[in-house]
Image 1 (tube, rainbow, N blue to C red):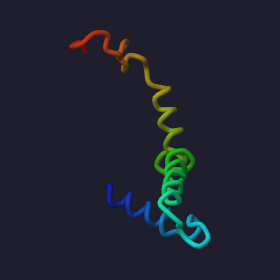
Image 2: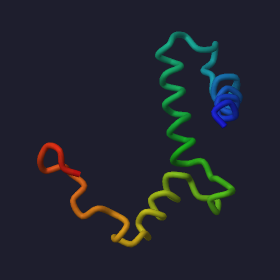
Image 3: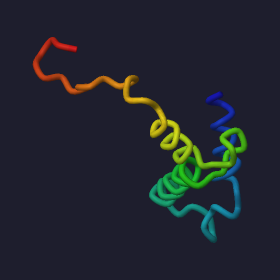
Image 4: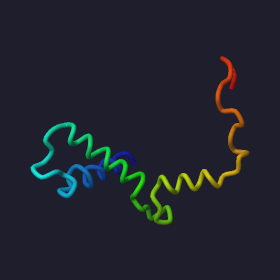
Length: 84
């Protein structure tokens, strides 16, 4: 699965002429910005066919908003050392 994601990333972000700035990447900072933009698009704007054509972040937010409270701990923060 990781290999598939890596191949998709290379094809859609790194090798895609539409994603590259004119003249190619100038430095590592250019690539870092492109990667951050791609990850933002991939998680927040990409419409996913298996998720009823919703972006993954929206689908996850909707899922967790519809779950009953009984699935969550009432106090998830440790109040003293050694407690759960």
